[in-house]
Length: 246
Image (cartoon, rainbow, N blue to C red; front, side, top):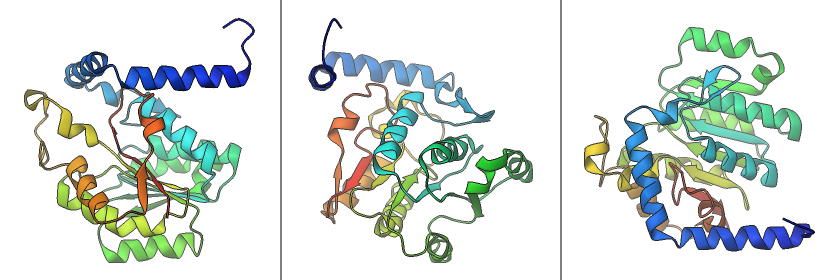
């Protein structure tokens, strides 16, 4: 990059990201690669501290950028899976500060609890709630843990049907304070070719992206972080990184 200043480098990066986002052919190819690779469970290949994350590294780095910039006190994630993402957030909080991570899932195996408990200081930051994310009693349990703080980041990555995600968006968005993020996962489902879909209760017309559209139509409290999204190219969450602005 020669003798470029840091500001000049930042300007170059921003322009390159805008140009890349405007390259429709490249974005089409990237989606085709994502759809083809999904047949081989590409998004299941990444681990953190030995536990699968079930997400693209590109999206995890985007979450890291958000956490670094906003320094939430708590991160609430609906959809625990194998716990890798919870450990990822806990690692960042060990470095950056913050109080805790809450993971919600309808089924949390005992052996997963044991493996997380064995992670020392990371485990002390994690609270696991075995419950439906859309039950009012679950929201109350989350509120009891986080207290009065609104320095909260929410990541929704559980049941991907329209009705479920819309219920989660409505239920957890009030927890997110000004400048903090509400992340709606797997919005890419709406854009995937029909023949690429694995058998699931969700699909085109019934997924997080359709729920997100309905949610944004009924509130002006959040806006999509376009600058973050346009530099990812490979992402499961296009348009799904929301920042509270009012």
